[in-house]
Image (cartoon, rainbow, N blue to C red; front, side, top):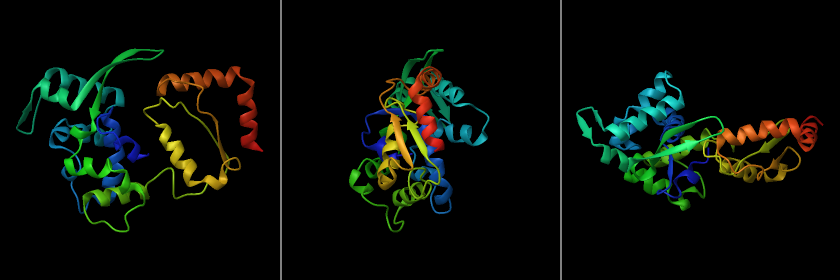
Length: 230
């Protein structure tokens, strides 16, 4: 996942559980030297989201609803109390409609989810011109861990890959594809290509639905599948 893209505008709201899932990967490599508190704000940790994810007992939809309830009702945890107004400073509650349902989602604000140090480091594009050669603090350690676990760089495709992506997808951001493309520029058109990055202006669920409908109805997608097998 392209972490820099999520942090470059700290005023932008991003689904909170997505941040946590990204960071858990890095924490695995950093756990001996750093704590969650080195990266995440105390208020965010008090929501219980890390325990929810680690328990594997809840779906992402259920986690969303538990966060929405905290925003609407406030939170008391670990000896601390947060009013609904204080929770609303960390999360925006949005009503999201898809082709199948309408629900409320809690979208976290980066400047409230993370420590001031983390926000300053990951919002600075200059820090991402290269991967730090060594870990000098919590942020550089996390940067190195995320780079080592990257799904877009550090490996070479062995078979052809075709991408079809909605630029409005907030679950799997389009910047992931751009990172992959830039890291494998010499292979574009040979080992990978993007079929269409404008076919949908919808988010993840509706974008996927549009793709599968088009896959069955549009002849040009059949030709793209043929390219994969050549």
